[in-house]
Every structure is written in C-alpha cells, then in structure tokens.
Length: 103
Image (cartoon, rainbow, N blue to C red; front, side, top):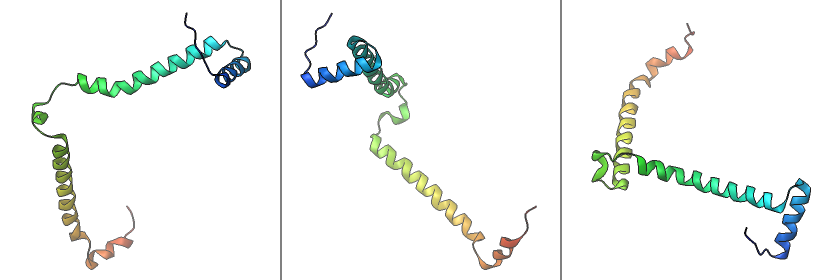
C-alpha cells in the first residue's frame, strides 16, 4: 500500500472525478498509472525493434547522415533522368493527341 501526498486542489479534483465516475480514487490512479506504463512501453517499441534488427554490413561503416545524402542524391538523379525522357512528349506536334477520344 502506498500513501500519496497530493496538494489540496489535485486531491479535490481526484475526489470529484471519482464521484462523477462512481469509482474510487485508487481505481482512477491505477488506471492512470496503467495508461502511463502502456504509453511508455509503446514509445520504447521503435527503439526495441531497432535494437533487435540484424546489423547490415553494407551500412556498418557509414555515417547515417552521409548515407541519407547518398540515397537522396540517387533519387534526385532518377527524377532528373525521368524528366529528360518526358521532354519528347512535350512539344507542339503532340498537342493533337490532347483532344483524342478515349477508347
């Protein structure tokens, strides 16, 4: 058993909530502590998953920020390559197809 010292306003609020919900203050505190523990566990979940993942040799000697920059550069290069290939379709001769009926 644990005795809590609450300031008067908090104690008053707890008692009022308990009366409104027809529960005991202990039940409300137990529920709140349970919710707090559950939220802490769920926030630790991504960390636990990351720690459980196997190490990938390809990434072991690289700085995460430089790796992210390399990946961003790769995607940028792919987007630029696609943009160049689409310029063939962006000319006046191809405008005739804009009003063609759908099949």
